[in-house]
Image 1 (cartoon, rainbow, N blue to C red):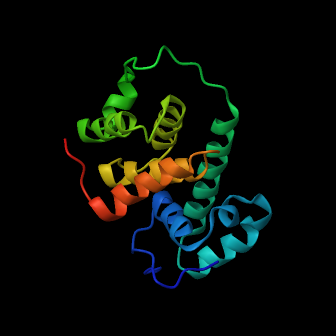
Image 2 (tube, rainbow, N blue to C red):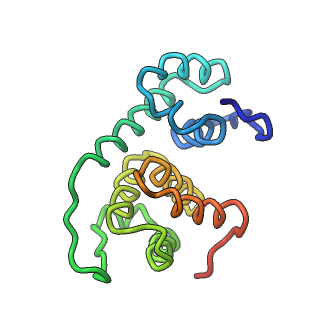
Length: 166
């Protein structure tokens, strides 16, 4: 269902995340994650001004998200510290890593969701900043089973509380 209370005009230089954010803000989760619906969504996104290659990358990103959900992840004991790989450190600033830790401490992200978020962030070719991390977290949580409450808490943080405390 298209929401009319949101500015839906894409920016001049659209990125994969811009396409994903547009889908997130304008469609119900099932509408953009349903592969049977992708052809009509591609047409609508093209009509909205998004380049075809960015739309294709966005759907590939969503497919990767679905693939991640189906992989079992094994973690250490609760409260263990996540060590970031060199490539992750190069792309995720201290603010971005701190925000992920903050979400874990609040109980919004668990170890599985954190790993999916990091994987999906690394799959974005664009520069990763705190705003992008927030959006990827929202996209991951909206696709996680039984994460409705965590999603709502994060949505409140992103939309209504602004910046987090460092």
